[in-house]
Every structure is written in C-alpha cells, then in structure tokens.
Amino acid sequence: MRSVRTRGLVVATTGAALALTLVGCSSDGDDNSSDGDSPAASADCADYTQYGDLKGKSISVYTSIVEPEAKQQTDSYKPFEECTGATIKYEGSREFEAQLPVRLKAGNPPDIAYVPQPGFLKSMVADYPNVVVPAPQETVDNAKKYYSEEWVNYGSVDGKLYATPLGANVKSFVWYSPQAFEDNGYTVPKTWDDLTTLTAKIAADHPDAKPWCAGIESGDATGWPATDWLEDVVLRTAGPDVYDQWVNHEIPFNDPQILTALQAVGSILKNPADVNGGLGEVASIATTPWNEAGNPILDGACFLHRAANFYQANWDEDVKVQEAPTDNGVYAFYLPGKSESDKPLLGGGEFVTGFSDRPEVAAFRTFLASPQWANEKAKVTGQGWFSANSGFDSSLLKSPIDQLSFKLLTDPSYTFRFDGSDQMPGAVGADAFWKQMTAWIGEDQADQTTLDNIEKAWPAS
Image (cartoon, rainbow, N blue to C red; front, side, top):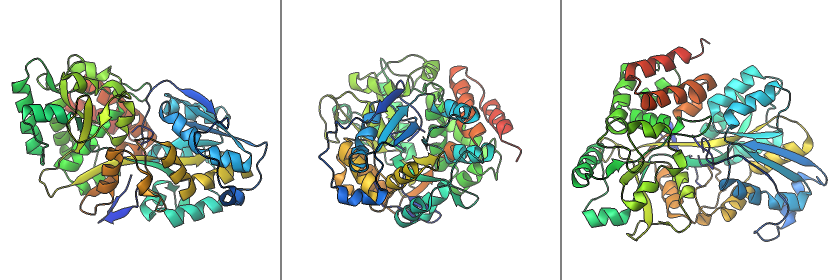
C-alpha cells in the first residue's frame, strides 16, 4: 500500500478477477496549493463548462501522496482551476491513515481525501456515517461509464458508491540491474523455483553482498511493504480462491495455508544469507525507509528488491529505468508464479472520498472520475502512475515500467487481485497487519504468533 500511487489501463476480467490497478507513504508531508504556474499548456475550457463557474471557491484535498508525486497531483488540477476559477488546497501527509480519523472525530474533515484502502473506507462509513458523503449523481454516472463493476464495488459500501478510483498500480515486480545480470550471466526467473535458485546463486557468487534488499519503514504506515510480500506469496502458494477467502475472513487470518505463505516469505526476508544487502542485518528491514531500500542495487550490495511499479519515482534522476543493460540503470521483472502458466498479479489504487456536499466539491469529485483528469494526470507525470479509467489514453505513458504494468494488467492470462490488506477492515489492514509484520521482522516474532495476533484484531462483526 502506498500512494502515487500508485497503486493507465482499460480493465479486463479474468474469471472472478480483473486485470486492472497506491499505498502508503513516502517522504515528509507537504501542503501544496495550486498557484496557476503550471508546466502544462493552457486548457481548452470548453470541456470544463460542465463544472460551472467556481470562481472564489476553495476545495481542500488530504492524501498520503507526498513529494515527489504531490507536485504531479497539483499540476494535474491546473486546467480545472484555470477553467472553473476554483482553488485546490492540497495536503499530503505520511501520517494520513492515522490522522484522517482524528480529523473526522474532531469535526475537521477535509473536503476530499484519497483513501488507499477499500477496507479503511468501509470502516470510516461505519464509524462516521453522517460525515462521509456519498458520491453525487454526476460522479456516479462517470464511475459507471468509465470503470468496471469491480472497481465501482471497491468504492461502494452496502451498494452505495462513496469513493471513485483515482490511480492504479501493479505490485508484483522485482527491481534489478540489467547490467549486473548481464555481467554475472543471470537470467530473469520464469518460475518461483527459478527465483529461489537465482537467490542461492547470487548468495554463493557474491559473499560480500546479499541477493535481496528490503525496507518497510513508512512513518505511521510502517509495515505495509511486508504485507504486500505476504499477499503476493499467498497468491502463489495458496492461489486466488484461498486469497479471496482470506481477505474476506471466510477462513481465519491464521489459517495453515497463510502460515505456509508466511514461512515462504520468511525463507527470504528472515534469512541472514539473503538480506539485507548494503543496509544491515535482518532486523534492519524494519527501520529502513521503504523508498530507499532499493538503492543498494546501484552499487552491487544487493541484486533484487520487490516493489511496485510506483517505486520508480524514488530512484535518483540520473538513474536510467530501462530493460537494456546500462551503467546506473535499473528495471523490474514480474514476480513469477509456481509455473510459467501460473500468473497471479497483485495491485492496488486510491479512491476519492468526499466529506462535503458543496457544489464545488461535487464538481471536483466528478472531474477526478473523468478521462479528462486521468489523461491530464498522465501528461504531467513522468513515471509511476496510470489509471483504471476506460477512457484513459495509454499512449500517454512515458515509462517502460508503466507500459509493462499496463500490458500485464490488460493481459487476460494474468489473474489480478486487489491488495488484500487494503480490503480488510481498517483495524486489521491498516493497523494490526502492519504492526505485527513489523514485529515479525524487527523483533523476530514467531510466524504463528504473528498470524494469531492479527486474527485477534479482526472485528467481531
């Protein structure tokens, strides 16, 4: 879970799944107000008359999307501001998940929040039923026109649409250096066994380095990258049907099949021979900022880093993101399944939630649910973002990783599942799951104890 999210694409379905797609947090919070100094060309305002004259109106937006992605967000609002006269007051925070409920309880909600977790949304609607405002009809119309039924359902509670999709992301990626692979004769693994073999070979070939590097520190959201690890492995060891049962609590969180998956994750993340290259011992994973954890790839201290497509926004500007081998270059490969034909895919996204029914807020929510906004966002985003909006113009994607993500998510041979922790109740997915996975790594907490503690946190009703 992290935002840029990353969590474009046209959604396709694969059985009960869709082929889609950011959470969590990155750097320090930032409060931005769009000021009209946009890098984009002046908008054609004919397409914006539908939103009305909003001159002098202000709309506050609160999110977990912080710099460098925050500027991409505020730049994407420029045409709306220019053509309607409205001002968007943007605030990104590393403490979003913890602070939004505090603000709701204090009677100081933002006009709009970008919520990365459908489970968190459901918890807010249950806890603050008169505070969370359902989507206005124009927004509902856009959602039903431009998003799949699955995506609409993610933002719905008891059949009522409260939140529309914003961004999308793919999480089943492993970052690496194509040059290092070429230099060492390594090939991209096609199966989980291939990945295990590659890990062992790297460890044997490079005693002064480690195969993997990882970090899960993310402010109040510390632990979320570890939940992604477990979710990805549950899909690979137990399969999508068990994954669905687990996410919906049709089987307990500590089901033996989930224990098997956690043990498989631990065979990498808790193995001193495999981690934490260039960063420290196993426990250092718990204190290493997630957005810096891949850096040792660049100096050969590690070779592999599991992270979503949106991780690309955290590489330094001089790092080349490309598949061809090059100095100071990185790329990502699909985290393989048990076999080449087994293709589970984990992803996520954010959802636009409203706390005011003022006309200007309704207009902005409708804009954010439109292809207009999705395409504008792609124009001002260099990398790490795309949309599940069916009107999205995929030719606007600039990054090869985003192009690869789009390809995977629209390929019906891949079985997509939305981030599990993001769908679970907030007390689990955005609290106990994060904290217990952090203790599992940082304190070497036992596998069974970790799962038992999360199961105990699941709400009784």
